[in-house]
Amino acid sequence: MTCPSTAAPRCSESLACGETDPAETPEGCSRLYGPRFWHAYAACLLISVAYSVLFRYADFVTVLGGTELQLGWIVGAGMVGSVLARLSLGAAIDQRGPKLIWLGSMAVFAATCFAHLWVTRCDGLPIYLLRFVYCTSLAGIFGAATTFVSGQITAARMAELVGIFGTSGFVGMMLGTHLGDLLVGPGPLERWLVDRMFLTSSCLTLVAMPFAWLSTRKAHAPAPHPRVNTLTVLRTYHPGFVLAIGVAAGGALSLPQTFLRTYAAEIDIPRIGMFFTVVAATAVAARVLNRRLPDRLGLTTMIFVGLALLAMAQGLFLVIQSEWQLILPGLPYGMGQAILYPMVAALGTATF
Image 1: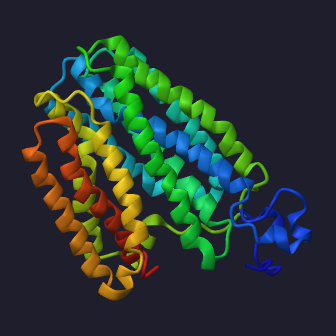
Image 2: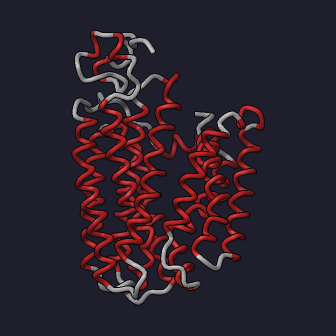
Image 3: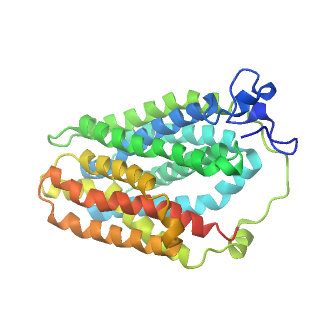
């Protein structure tokens, strides 16, 4: 990769450059994975661990006396609220820059996790509001981080960079779910055990914030520019049937994160880390091994393959009876997730 022209960001501001006078040396500009990248990677890895620890959020609702129905309403309401918030979140990143949104969202996420310690009821307004803020802050963190990383490199290397950056989420998923199992333990649920999850997530986020600041410390707010209405953008670049596919895939992919803990408890499986470890490892392997398949089969075919794998995984949940058998749904689940995320994103943004 060569230094960009004067119309592009200066080399000294690029993620690909080193910290020692990179604008003056071709070697500096050739460094794709400089300190900025690894600081951003560390920040998102820690956030992914913090987020994955709370895959046992169902334990929190259970301790408060809630049922799976109430768990679904709480998680669903929070997600609907965050979807609505995203209509302005993307515009805020464009107008204010990813640095402010990234750091601000991390601070809000840490405060939200900490605030859960004072929730005593699962049928009151506070738990719904906190879940809404929790989901919205996560959207801000990952949206701003990905925007920042992808905006620091030329388009020719963007897919590679974002792909490597995305492995932080898989590694965080493996570490976070096992950490959650360790914090709560296999014994009877108690409130102080569940509170440890939220305290750990909050502390991990605070540790991640300096890394995000180090990555963005030389970034500047974007120049003012006219704002295009979000609804106008949606009407112009509507992804068509891919939107329905995304809804179906999103529902299937979110089920284990919400309900696997209570389902496992019903069949006397105390830990869920095995499943998410298999999912993460399989997803990484599938993306590496199948990276050429979309060119041969096409994006639409790959999407239907991914949906079929997710459907298979849901069925395999019904046959598991012990912890090691979580591998059975984890394998097709991981392959389906590895396929669907990039395929839906590619088709959904093709018009744009």
